[in-house]
Length: 226
Image (cartoon, rainbow, N blue to C red; front, side):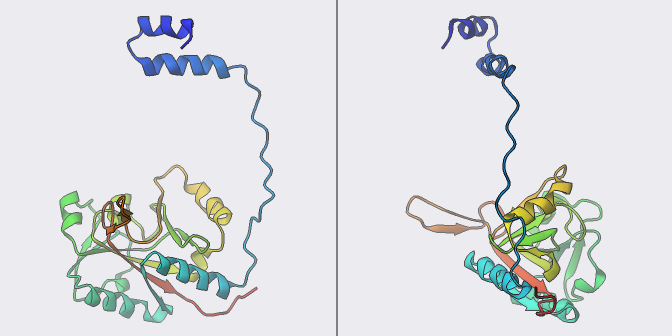
């Protein structure tokens, strides 16, 4: 530790503040950062069918469930998933389309923010997404349409997530470009159910989010292949 920093620490009981001041002085005259070459692929040019198939494969690798449906069958697919998981109380964002919500469940719309206890006591949450990334099998939520606030996707034990085929991009750079406009809001990136492993690699699910992720991929025809 330099003498200068030692002197500062004697007059300020915060070691963190002293270190930060020293860093600011050291970097004040630093040259501007050099531009970073972006020579990697910015867009996945593969056919849409291949991109969607990869997304399904990667999501299933994370032990999530994926159901491919057309738009007309989406409401019945959601109802079927609720029956499969025994869902009786379903949390929904305030702008969820009415036709998505099965008649035989108790809908818990988050129009007036539900308490954490209410979210935790529900059986599942139903949301849409901002977009998804095939390369990593990830689903991204940014609080936009059909998504609600971040807590909705973290506290219920099951997450039913609607992903439209046109929302799936091929690569991470495409995903970063998609998320940039919403960077001022909390971003949630979901890659399979919540899980962790201990030192012996024993997998434990549901540690910091839903233990079950059920993805409904809508509109998976091969039209629009490039």
